[in-house]
Length: 628
Ligand code: F6R
Image 1: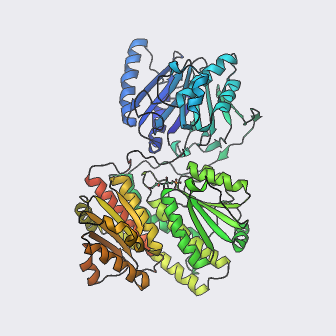
Image 2: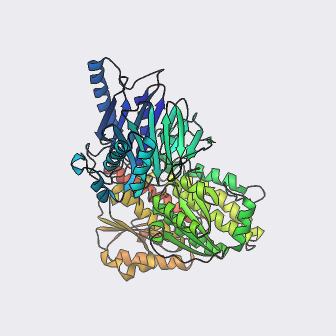
Image 3: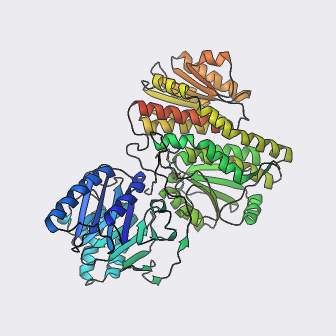
């Protein structure tokens, strides 16, 4: 939440900042702003409410105006070195107004911040509250810096550490000081910040925002502070001691801010799911031998295999869609590997006494690898000396860097705020992990393994087949958009998919929806059902859960609900019972959820689109949730 992009070096500084901010906009789009040294060594600050295009408009007006007055093209240096800081905001303290947009100023200091200062109220006693011009916690940081800078007679390092020592909460901060052209400061506790070496220096919340030619990166760790001066830099540790850190070479894909002809990233990402699945399977199975080949990308695979042989239980900790994927993982790992699994939202896990046995393996699932609650949970279990693994989509993210064994979702950059392809990647990985556990624990026969591999390979073409049912998605979306509430029902492995389907609808279409275990309906939610409600039911192809879910569906139908059914069976009874029914291709039941989630994503998307909403940027949300 909130994106930071700062640059010091040659070329067009404002252009570089704007290019970087555009790639970080997924982190917040309430407001944005930049501050940069103009050629007369004064800092020019431009802030705008709304998305980056608003800042762009304002910037060209202000730069044009200041060029007229001073004869200089502010910030637009070419061979000379310049510097500037840029911010895109997801509002926490203070409404999304221009006054609350970053950078915030105190004396010569211009500050941008990602995070939440929890003791902001208390800190106001250390500064003159009359001097505050905004409702933000960030402005307090700027005023503290100013106070300590005066007290320490211009010693920047001491002022920064005195400031950091006062702050409670989470912060990634970048600062420009008008008295010190050519210098830039950054410090952090919690949210990510990386120093990237290119033609100049970039400090950013996310290395995806930096061109692919820039591959040398230093990740700042919590408590560290970075001082950049005349193109040289020095990092200090939490105790204020100078430290040397090596650059890591991080080859990576360029930020893919190209919708490839789709109206939204979300739709593009939904359509990428078959190829993402192909890629995961290519790297994790031996197709011809019909065998699994599951290895962590980070950490030694032999020691990982030794570890999973001896684990007594698995605890999965994650948030949002990643948590729902974790619930699916529980069904799979317990069913196929016979290992007990508990799943918990990270935000609950971190504020209670959690009891483990020492052979519990903790699995963190996170698309971004930067979710604050999940990272706090990681710190908690590391303190207890437990072994940790992650399933993460962003290599070198804070989560990936700190776990014992890291698996990569391999979904490619996910730009749409609502998770789609990262969710399905998580499902695929959890299936692979469940069977890998089973194989290593000698409960998987080679026949079973071969048949699993065969079924897995059917997934990508079947996903493509499901994506082809566009007429069904459009028709149902049109028919459903007037309903005031939705219940998504499923049992067993379909229950987590029901939760995910309801979340998608809430997030991007702003319609109240609940995911529920189908059998729990009669214990309360049935009271909600009337002709204004829609029930989306996910059915297996056969067996006791099919029969039971069908009964639950009939109960809802009897009470007047509009019924949308998805499942592995194609019968006239189902078509009669449901107002809209989509049969899914035939696959073993534990794989069917991977297909079932696609229509739920598509229906949510088309309902959202029919209202004219921007599915890529749901209101009040941001992609990377770096605050608790
Ligand atoms: C839902 C969604 C969120 C995230 C959640 C966790 O569409 O995107 O619920 O799943 O914020 O994020 P990660 O997986 O990055 O930890």
